[in-house]
Image (cartoon, rainbow, N blue to C red; front, side, top):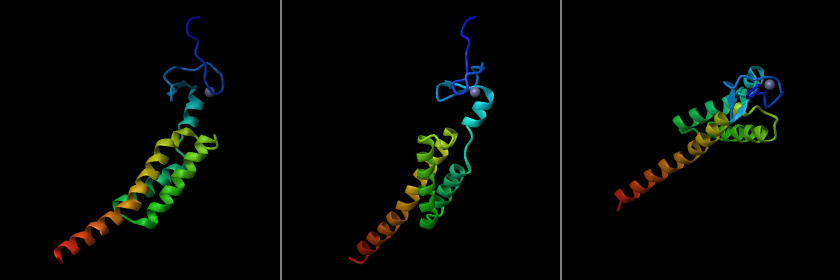
Length: 116
Ligand SMILES: [Zn+2]
């Protein structure tokens, strides 16, 4: 038998079409492993909302939830499928937190320049 492939998680025979982060998984493990948790989804949504309306109270929970989700994925408490969504939420949250200050800063600078 050439190249008998087994699931990297549970060891059963696995189809090589189920690849996740260079591991071959069986179909049930693949579905479980690539699940994006509701916390990861919430972080991403809050990040998008936070950056689009420059809302700091929305950006802060995006950063916190994204960070908690990434920690949970690292420690194995959450499925790694949510990693991208959690990273995106955290990153957008950080930008959403910073750019209102940049906008106000630029507005203040231009106001000062005009008044010279
Ligand atoms: Zn499996």
